[in-house]
Length: 71
Image (cartoon, rainbow, N blue to C red; front, side, top):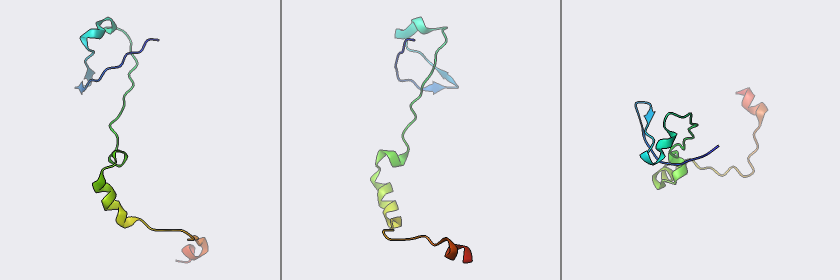
């Protein structure tokens, strides 16, 4: 199996193969995509600042299932 790599955008469900790969036209291909990273994966500082208020130190915390079920 041969592999090629190029960047392209899809339009109306179609992806244009660059002319440099015209020998691939009318052949069966397998397409692998690389999605855009989610915002939390890119390290946006504004997201980190927002979520810092929800950080809690749970060191030594023990969950008591019986007490939770009593509520």
